[in-house]
Image (tube, rainbow, N blue to C red; front, side, top):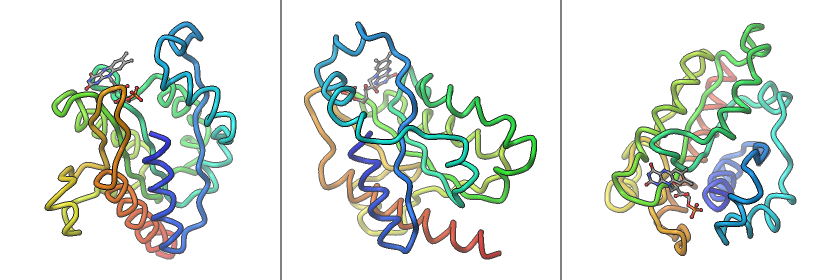
Length: 186
Ligand SMILES: Cc1cc2nc3c(=O)[nH]c(=O)nc-3n(C[C@H](O)[C@H](O)[C@H](O)COP(=O)(O)O)c2cc1C
């Protein structure tokens, strides 16, 4: 997810956006993290270098890209936990008229990529944000990555996203930046 997020952020930056790359708080028990070498590597190596998302980030941004691996076909409780702290901003209308998009990963091709993305997007309807799908507009999306709902990585615990997935995420970041700027200007 971090690799996809970084590619998406690069795509948004290339299209003129000011980007805050953030992570949500890790709430899983240490024993669960230690049971997965890649999770442990991320938790101890990469995650501490990334700032934790705050409500100020949500209020500041004109557009959001929320990424989450699939957990039984749904977003993680970690992401949901953060989104559930946004009630105050929502009540004051501060999350409306923005744009949002989602990206994900799963270990199997039919293991819930699309259901996870659609579940994240439900949040945008409640906020009054516009959903920006990845679509099929770019030839790369039609011929290679092939998920119009959002950039997706399918792989086992030893795989990492390659050019196909990272390019899709980059394109998604560019789309998000363009739509965020247009909606903010309107
Ligand atoms: C509790 C749990 C539930 C999961 N559920 C699914 C699932 O429904 N479908 C699937 O394809 N992968 C599932 N996975 C695998 C994750 O989606 C996988 O962690 C994700 O692709 C990120 O890969 P990584 O954990 O190797 O970094 C699950 C993993 C966990 C820990």
